Image 1 (cartoon, helix red, strand yellow):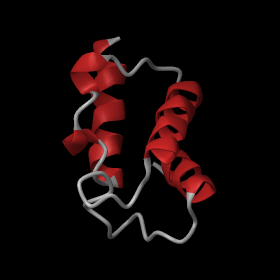
Image 2 (image 1 turned 90 degrees about the horizontal axis):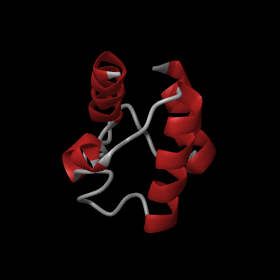
Image 3 (image 1 turned 90 degrees about the vertical axis):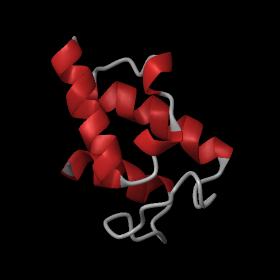
Image 4 (image 1 turned 180 degrees about the horizontal axis):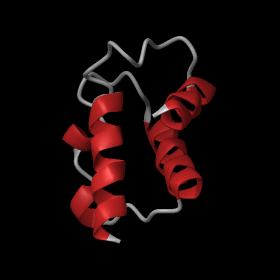
Length: 76
């Protein structure tokens, strides 16, 4: 999870990602940040985030993202 937090902090260090649970629905991250985030996650974890994973709830918190990454890794 440390790698994920590092990616998020590179995108916007002003957000407390360990506490924030509304990153997408609360519009904490803008569209460019989201695109960057998805690209960096795919590169860092060598996964593909397909359409079935592109749901707000998978990106609203660091915990949700981490759970999604682990689920994708298990599926591959």
